Image (tube, rainbow, N blue to C red; front, side):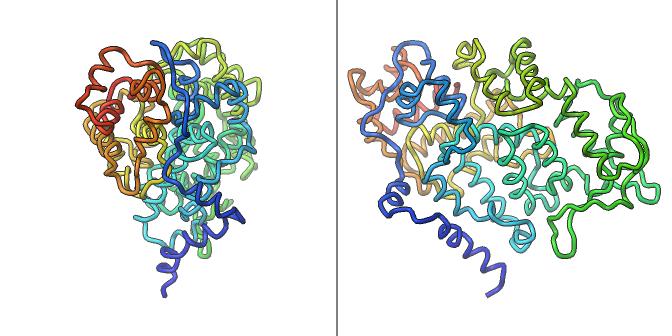
Length: 485
């Protein structure tokens, strides 16, 4: 058997063997296709429930029973659990996501595999992690910073290098110091290939390639209005010379080649980086960028748009930026400060879901815990939000409004999900209707999906005597009330 064939066919089974000595009953429970308690609370009242709103922003959408959990713990205690690096992602997530083997392989091994299954598994891993992990805040931050440090899968060897970037750069550092996240991204093999950093050389008088330097300043740190000049771009490009990707024995390794580095004096943002620093030029550069107030504002704006509003108030951005500066870029502290900010509740229901969030929140709302590899990827592609598919370094648009021209695939996905026609997805609508039954009757299902009691018009439209449970759920998921959060 060829090595490539063995890797393609066998690694998923090997990954599952490493899940530990879980009991058979726990395994059976974890592999159920539904996560619906026998009874669970739903929101009441005409306005969106504050706890529901909190869940909608801190997670990829409330599951049946999540509202009970937040009410029992309180929002601050729930948030502290989510911020705890020791929080277990949960057995279902460990079992099902661990079987997606490309996320556990090093680049040298991935070069043995064809690119298509790598891309499919990357997308499936993103969906399943957002769907199943108990570390929901971590997953929301992973999506946010994957856009901030975006890498398109289609360029060059990025397909083979992206799994390691997602695992060792984004997932590892999103709740740590921003300095460590930035440093890992700058020297990520995938990023060096994507932004042509691996071609950046001053050897034999070559002019340094400015692509990586420009995006480092414009997107990753200071921001487009961050106060840098074209001369700063040139000087940063000089600091970044000398890093190459790949060797004869390890195609995914990054090496510093001194002969390719511009070792002269540089002047960046008004600060001198002395000559003769070699690879230390990068450390000095990163310190300048992370400590710059424009970086604090740029990161604060990214997080405020993720959790609060497409157009966050200036005062909010400044407040979060001040926390960034005071904590030396501690992303855990910055996120905590943002989510406990006064006025957070006033933005309930004002953001439109991006397609990825819409799809995952719909699956979570129906208690789905199982999904075939390609069940939703073609819907996400038609909605304009297939993970890793955006071609340019700025990443997918943050505002859900940018995706509204592709509403038809959302309606089609809602219908397919409710009718059970997605591969390996069997929504238990009967259990959903029973679980939230009570004085409100079937209207409670709408309250569970909307985070508030349905209006009279919504009840009349979605709960007509002629509507089946499948029709009611499909129309509810397609409605403006569910499309916003």
